[in-house]
Image (cartoon, rainbow, N blue to C red; front, top):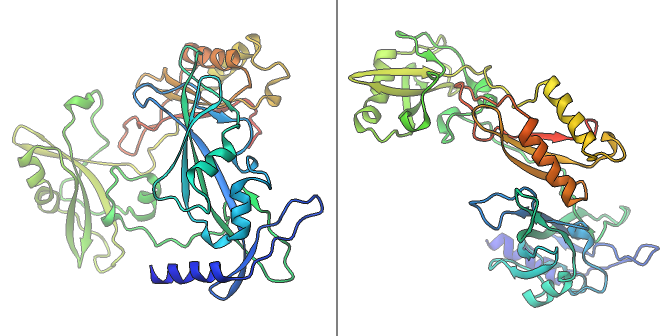
Amino acid sequence: MQMLRTAILALALAQSSALAAEDGTPHAPRAVLDGKPVSIAILINGYGTNSNRDDAAMRLARPVNEPFEWFEVSSRLVRAHLANPGHLGYSQLTLDIDAGGAVSGCTLGKDSKLPVDEAAICGDIIRQRFIPALDDNGNRIEGTYRVTIMPRRYPADKDQAHAPLLTGERDPAPVPMLAPRVDQLFSFPPSPFWMRAFYADPAWRIVPQVGLPAGVSEADRAYTAIIVSQKGGNPACRVIERSGIAAQDNGACSFATTVLGPVWADASAQNHRGVPLYISRQGEKLTAYAPDPEHEKSTRMADEVEHRFIVSLTEAGIFPEGREASPLRINLTPDSSGRVRHCRIVTSTGSDSADYATCRIARQLASLIPMEDIFGRISPYAALLWKADPTGE
């Protein structure tokens, strides 16, 4: 915290300049941070959210203009930032959007750090227009939109070009990450990324079954999740998720390390390899289920289904200038049978009726092959992002 206060103080006291481009648009003001010259731009982004979490909208509210385009040079936020670039920190605004696409409410997060107050920042953006949210019947409804505002710092040596004052682009510099450790995972089941990096087949006294038994309903599943690894040449075990059945949970690790008795070929290696297992109890017997790291399947639409889907959208007039010219992007979430359970417009066609028709046709025609996790279960995050322009970013 002391280092942060020192940095903020250095910024507040630094000499900054706001040179303007040829068109009169000011550059990001320059200052000194930790003894180095920087340009401090205002990074602004946003995203639509559901105002009613129990009833997901078919289309979320979306601004006509990108959030970083909302603020003119005369806006109170810009003027205050140019005068005091060291006062900008992470901030969040919540905007209420009415069914007509107007901003009906604006609230600044309590821990936000802006050089202006709530009334000033909300006054800057109150006239912005939005494409309103739609419900599953194609009706315009109220929605919410979250705006994040924070500083983005650019190097500012005297020979470097000046940075833009307002931007929606985050710093692309890679963030160093520590190597993951399977024995520290709390998410279960882990993704194939983790398992391909750390999974190695041990020798089992009793080999676990691969995958979970099919045809068992979610309500009837009571599994204890564990991770079995090696420690000093001996098997170690950690319970990740409990089933709620005390006898099963309490006996899972003992069962894994003694009855299953895994032995790794190189027991001296301290690389924290591990295997996630589900343990279930049938009567007095415990059974272990292991994953297949190569099993996970992405949600996809069969070629023939996609062809029928595209033909139906074209016949409905969704692509007046051709599929490749359409900005349409949708998220399709399947149920266990592959039928579309929820359709969400990610990028609108620009027409309420066309967006509604798109999701209506998707629910009627677009059967999917749902993603399965490494245990062979259909993932609750099995949505498919479908783009009208297959070559679009």
